[in-house]
Amino acid sequence: MDNNVSDPKRLRGMISDQQKTRMRLAVVATTIAAVGVCAANHLQLLEPLRLVIQDSLTPGRLTVLAFRPPAAAGSASSSDANVQLLQAALDKSERERRALIIRNAQLRDDLRRYDETRRISSLLTPTSSLLQFDAITANIVSPAGMPSTFSELLIDVGHSQGIRPSELVVDGTGPILDVGSEQGISAGDRVVEGASVIGRIRKTGRWVSSVDPVSSLDFRAGVQLLRQTGAGPFYGAEGILEGLGDGRCRLTGIPYTEAVSVGDDVVSARMDGINIPRLYFGRVTQAEFLSGGQWQIVVTPAASDPLPRTAAVIRTQLTPPQVRPDSSRTAGDPSD
Image (cartoon, rainbow, N blue to C red; front, side, top):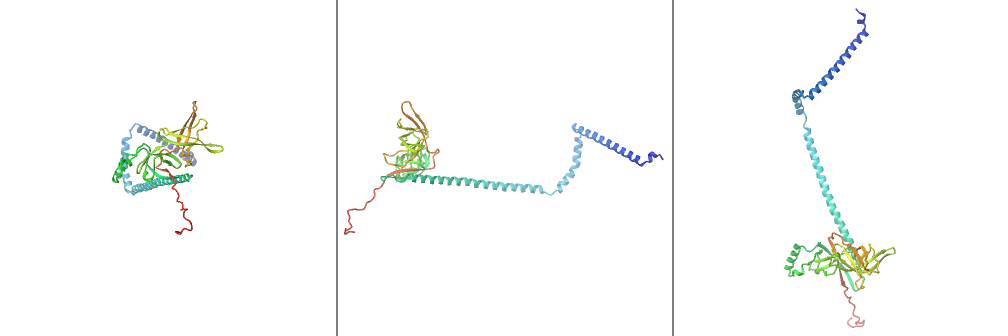
């Protein structure tokens, strides 16, 4: 036997070379097949073969689906139920939030009215033995004139009680209050929000009153400047506040010798030398000294816009005389 063939090491080397050759041929064949499949797929030559393969696999896929437990449907229904519960919780939280917002607004409004009532009470401290002041709380039922339906309602109620319509209906384009002559309200009474003047009573009916706002053309009031200086506030010149009809007022009657500055406050003036509650009208927003030696002063009212729901009417009354004991009677009077 040939030694070359019988050598084991040489034989193993030849087998190894043959395996490498086969592997190279397999790789080349696989590459050629892959390239051919890609080319055939690109040319849509494998479409019939793909359909045949899918048809052959369909029974197996159906069998797998038939033996699969129906967990997906239950999971979907459970997920829908969780979503509904979460949505219900969110809706409940939203309703509670809105209720808290409304309650908070009501509490803030109650606190504001309390502060205004306290401020008015401090302003109405008697300063004269001849006059006394009190405040009547009123609701603003209409911000601009009396609605026709409200007028008809008042006339119907008044007719049943024998009251003439002229005693019930009030004219004017300003706010309408739900107080009138029945509560002792009279024309000229000041209408305030806190310490700020909204206007004055124009006309009163039995149960309602109309108001001339501070900025209306029919409004007039005696006022006084209140100046802020480094030494503190002090009262300045007195004048007449007149409405301009455009949401502003003008201040007239200020002597040219008086000092006026933007930012000066405007408060109610004394009434014929009698101390009365000092109410706030607004602030000077324009002050120009004209060449003719006159002041042109514009005042922005302090009344809030829009108007509040409630206001107060300040009434001025004479202090009732005090009953003095009869001095003509003596200690020795037998009637004692």
